[in-house]
Image (cartoon, rainbow, N blue to C red; front, side, top):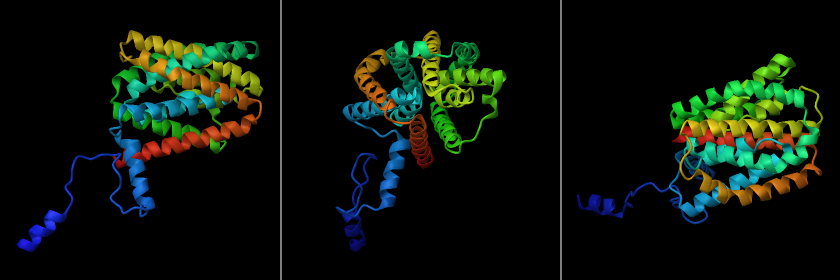
Length: 293
């Protein structure tokens, strides 16, 4: 029995799981599999990060998402909410992202007003008004884990459709506009995500890139504000949301400025394709994490 006891004494004690602790490999011997495991644990396990690291990662998410929004007119919410869902509950991330969306739209509003297609916008907004209450019900009524999984699946599916250039039949004609507007309103209120869907719908309308971007900016401003008001009436906005939004405004401003500078230098098709690949990667990591956890 003595050798067995000595062997057991040499084994490292297994303390509480720490997602940020270094892997148990000698220096320089980390395998690709071990790195993937740590990434999966991070994406799906909501690791116990320090407040400082959590804040830094949130700022990075917002900065990248704001660059995309300034460049393409959409994509901010999808990127920000998927990134923030890896750091905390979705029902806390959605009000923050909606507030930042409203702020970003305000900053872009002046330049968008002269180029907006108002007949298209009016039809989309009326339809979205019917979808927003459904989205609020989903966000306040479903389990947070199911919501996180749902947002990863939704973002990944929309990104795949965009990359495959699959035409959505519901995006064509006046009826298609009503369906896209209603679904987008529900998705924005529930997940703060509606950009890829309404962007795909408007892409069949024949609008030029400048008019498309401007119409999207006004649409998101109105619908995000309506969803935020609805969440407030449903008492679904956490107490410190306003404080978190104020801390993230500098990253939002910097990203929007950078995106607007890139807008005149990068072709719209290339920017949209890069955004879809980024969304697909984030959704894939999120689903990998959910499956691992």
